Image 1 (cartoon, rainbow, N blue to C red):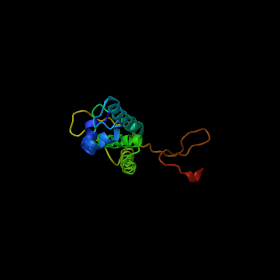
Image 2 (image 1 turned 135 degrees about the vertical axis):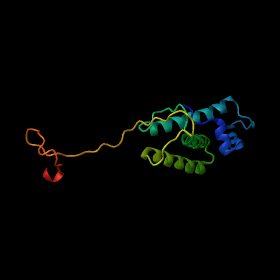
Image 3 (image 1 turned 180 degrees about the horizontal axis):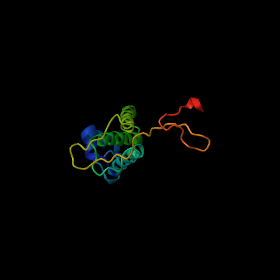
Amino acid sequence: MAYCTRENLEQRFGETAIRNLVDTDNSGVINSDEAGRITSAIASAGVRIDAKISGIYSVPFSAVPDMIREIAIHIAFYFLCLRTGKRLAEAGSILDAADRDIEQIRKGTMVLTDGGREAAIEQTSAPEPTFTRTKRDTSGNVLNPEERGSMDTW
């Protein structure tokens, strides 16, 4: 699913900047092949996002959270720059920032919201399990269930 649009890219980086990244025939107009490159970059950004957060959230999102849109814009821009070899240093920094945001989402330090829209964002991960040890006899029966065991007794 596309998490951003060509218009989002043009609003963020400027119509001229996006055109300069894809206008291979220097016509000053984005033709259908060049528009396809933008669409491909946007799709690749969505695939990357889904792959990185699929264990945390149910993807693809039906209603795109604002932060996911922002991340998708940055990743799509990176893919456009990568393809043309232009603005690579800037694009690399932008990709690094997007990856840091994704990592915060994965760790739970950044929570996705629906931006005030009605659609719910379904989180799929469960809380971390708590592991405990109990003392058992040789038959596997719990010895003194009120007392927790420790690794020292092993």
